[in-house]
Length: 207
Image 1: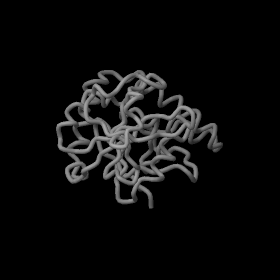
Image 2 (image 1 turned 120 degrees about the vertical axis):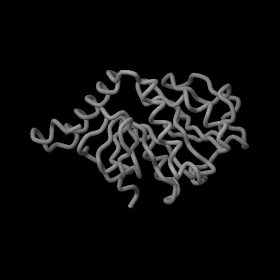
Image 3 (image 1 turned 90 degrees about the vertical axis):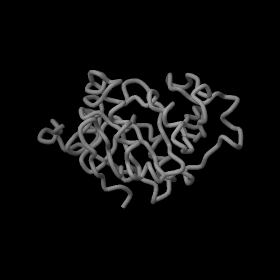
Image 4 (image 1 turned 135 degrees about the horizontal axis):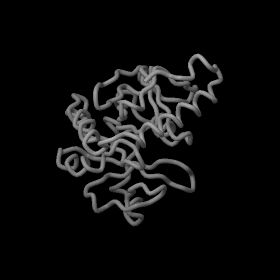
């Protein structure tokens, strides 16, 4: 999708706000979310990087994001160590949880499925970002370089900055969330790839 502000303003913050709002509206209006999400998730699990990964982070969808919760039960049967993030509200940080069964999740902050409180801090369930071999990333908008725009709170930027350099960062998005370019800041992390229902966009990654 072209950036409609490209010829109207050069102010990054104005552009960012406009693109974020447009991407959210596009995403909410996306039809057939369940079927298209399954297609996108199938592309993710067919990646060579997925085949060789032992520890894979999946996000659990919220709102109008590409839906992963329908594919997660199957992912638990793939012989991988499945990891999901959860938000520590007090610190606005994401922690990582080793998911072994969907029953371990309950609705938590921002109506997102999260690990049950009594399980979150068990030593066997805690995972460090450095242990991830492949990272699935959500987002509001993406560009053709793998640039990512999130919710604006920096949760994932902080988490991803601690992932290993050799662990691919792969975003899932509907095609309606893709723009020619989006403003990025120094702390923003580029994706290695962005998967939509119609293509896999190679990104510049963390170079």
